[in-house]
Length: 161
Ligand SMILES: Cc1cc2nc3c(=O)[nH]c(=O)nc-3n(C[C@H](O)[C@H](O)[C@H](O)COP(=O)(O)O)c2cc1C
Image (tube, rainbow, N blue to C red):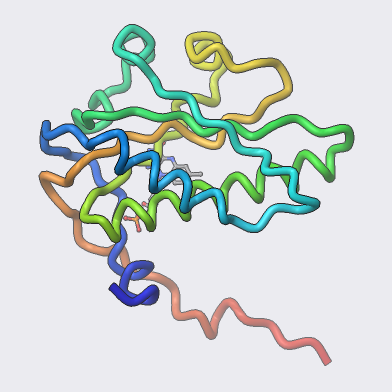
């Protein structure tokens, strides 16, 4: 798949088949994701594999679309607010790379914000000062929703003199 096609056709998947993803596959997508840009090579991302007990406690409203695998991506703390923002930006690049690598391989990802609340941070055992980028259902799509139209990019471009 050409990169433009991979980017355009990726969708947030909300219903998964039960088929498990071999660990060698999803770890290869994480490895690909780790080629994300990151300031001063901080590589600020960390990945939690969310086991069945934690997953049940999270009590997500659709159980992550019945995904066979649930991961959380965390972003490491930093000494200054700017460094922390940069860590979070790099970790978001990592998350998007992961989504694209999964999509290219015929899988899909559901990015959920459920990990942000204090309750869910505690369930996930997130250390203080870490950011939760998201909690991600990962699997082979049972349904692929239609693309949501985007604003024409010309309307997002401002030209400075
Ligand atoms: C930071 C972030 C948090 C998100 N959190 C949620 C969420 O909690 N629940 C959800 O259904 N989708 C969530 N999404 C997915 C967006 O809803 C989705 O990307 C958007 O609707 C566009 O759809 P698409 O990804 O299929 O293009 C999140 C996406 C991002 C980048």
